[in-house]
Image 1 (cartoon, rainbow, N blue to C red):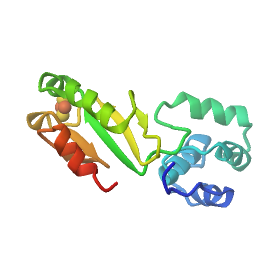
Image 2: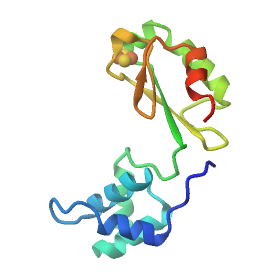
Image 3: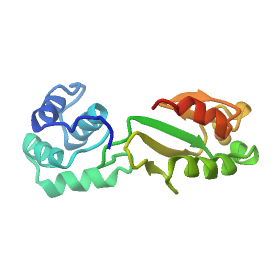
Image 4: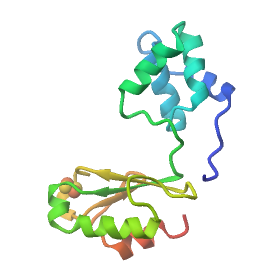
Length: 156
Ligand code: FES
């Protein structure tokens, strides 16, 4: 795991209490507040959201598990997105993806063993003319190659 500090119960309560009050506070808005702040839903957040919203833990799990964008483990310190959309696929993204698996020591999406990098596959990063495309923490890079990716993640 990386250097990201595990949020305390107080950190989570602060995130829930300080969520933007656009409409009324709900289980979903509270989970979003926690997810936006910590980039995942820590285990203890489910009980805290249940208490805060007056719902049961099952109600909160029901909402949390319905939305596939919520994750329940901490992300890496840096996110590496590799596009495997149609254009990037034609331009060689599968080979790049295979090489990146070797580079990171993982064989699918997820975190490296040291927790520093989260690898994600993207269906289109919106820069097809620059394909194959990758992104590091949402910053796009075109004409991807293994050496270019290595260079951008060196020092992480
Ligand atoms: S398909 Fe890769 S950026 Fe569009």
